Length: 194
Image 1 (cartoon, rainbow, N blue to C red):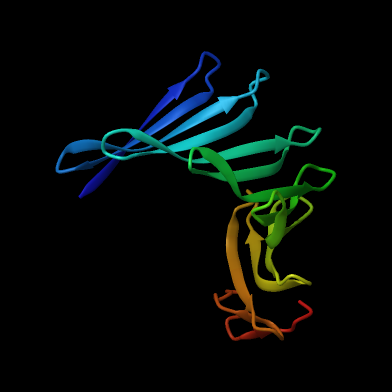
Image 2 (tube, helix red, strand yellow):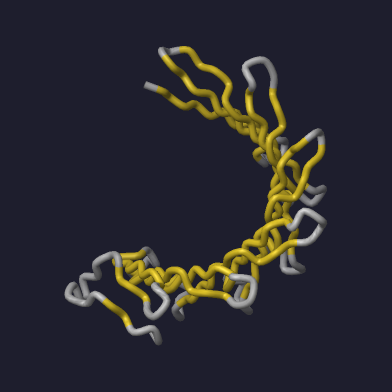
């Protein structure tokens, strides 16, 4: 049996600055991964770097860099791989918000290898009047248009937690239900306009 242990280190302002993960096999703990967090002077997360234990030393693996909008919300999360002694862009997630600071769209864009990014996929989030997530639509970009892939619909309880959710997948003509809904267990297809 493998047991994981995580050790957290903090700075004087109680920001997490390092998480060390170790795994134990037969009661002996070995290093596994280490995540190092770096903050701006204002105490806002700037980036974090992940390192992997090679058995003899720590090897830098990835870095996640945060960009914020004027309201202080994450606007871009850039994922970079450490290759040949330098960080190279892998992909980024671009976040858009509504007027009440709720994420409306998160778009994954893959690096084109020459300094730009190409759209890959996006999630479109819809909320009810209480700001609870009720629909999450996943789309993929084919180079010309965004195509639906799946839609998750939530029926939330008073605390905003899903009591019931339905996942549907797009088959080119309509969304197919793949998880049962207690509201209508006999329904197997949903019109494409839904």
